[in-house]
Length: 333
Image 1 (tube, rainbow, N blue to C red):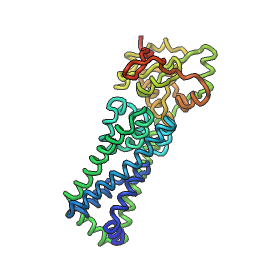
Image 2: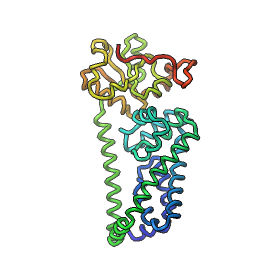
Image 3: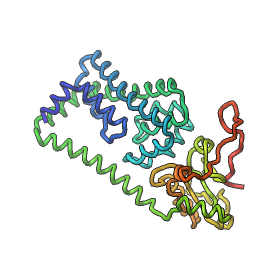
Image 4: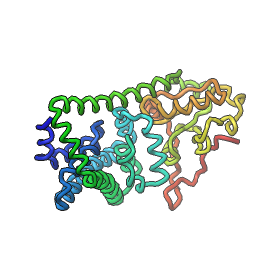
């Protein structure tokens, strides 16, 4: 264990740079503890602390701009790929869209404190067309808050951190094994949470060809889009209803949804999340509310669009704010 502590002391800045860069690119390797430890080791020098903060912020900005560019170039496909490697699927696209849609670039100020949010928010900023200068400004401020808090805690509790490192060094290889054990427990816990989430959302689904076939036959199910309103306005399945904010606040969806007899062909729920996580969550909620024939759409809007089927988009004439002047299809009468 002593060699590992010496390595951090000798090459702390380089380790921090790589750690922050890799974590912000999506790998489940927490950088915050390393920032705290390095801040404790460099606490005696204000100049080196400032250098540490600058290096870590620069690494975070590199990763975030990569995701921003990817989101700008490839759109929703990038968001889906991020969620596929994420160990926190419950913090995936729909939740990020909701927060970013409500707060815009300001949400980047706290993005790095929320597991699974930072990479998706960066890609989403590119997808929705946030100006690069605005993105860089708020992302840099957010990285400064995140890095600065870790370095400040490390320097504030430098003696405590030093004592802990001394104990681990005294333990030798057992100290190293203890650190590896804690890291393995962290990964296993995240993996188990992901697996449990996916298992809890297992239910019958409907494929894009099946849904298109129902449309062709005139057997129109009620289609519900559970994505954020901004994404809905940018394109959705024709005739789909936007899942209103009000319907997300509890399990009493039957209080304001149309009565069940008004859905003779069932309900189809879709999103843009891997494994249809968001759609399956809402489908489960509707089932608890008493709706029996509810199925998520496999692949969501991306699969629908990839099949060459029509996607409803806002008219050319839009309001000065960039929003369509066409009213959204209501979910309730």
